[in-house]
Length: 225
Figure 1 (tube, helix red, strand yellow):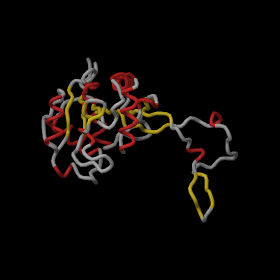
Figure 2 (tube, helix red, strand yellow):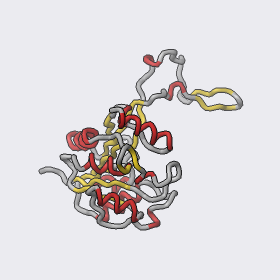
Figure 3 (tube, helix red, strand yellow):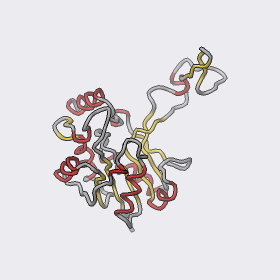
Figure 4 (cartoon, helix red, strand yellow):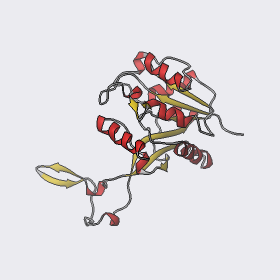
């Protein structure tokens, strides 16, 4: 039997790096619309909802066909609110799903193949958790802290590799897709543990908008693709 999948787009009104970024126009439509449009193409998502406390964001999401079954409580929309709390709240409001998918609106270049690929990996491998990652641009094997005025390697190695291709590949979370079995997420209260499966995405689709420069880069990529 096909599993029931709830997809949540979390979008609060307060944002520091880029004010009102969730509804800022990006290449002709609001930032949040890029995520809504791709999620609606999914062959796995049963129900797509928005979690927001902001009336303007709610109206924009509805215009683009995203369901808004509740208004997020203000105490779950603060700067210090842990990211998992609105997800757990949404699960309580919309029960009886097998999987939950978190789609942050700050990943406008992520497409339906990425969304469905991550969900598919979780289902096929019977994984409790699966998240999207991309190969890190800068290797942690070349990173240092400074102790007593001297460089101290972040990762101890017998010999420092000179060429990048001699280093093990490393990956970073790109914030684009988070998938979990609902019962496992309610228990763990995190998408990340030692059993989380990685879904690898290309760097070009892994931009996470946090600054005005990120907005310009993503706009340029969209306009020239």
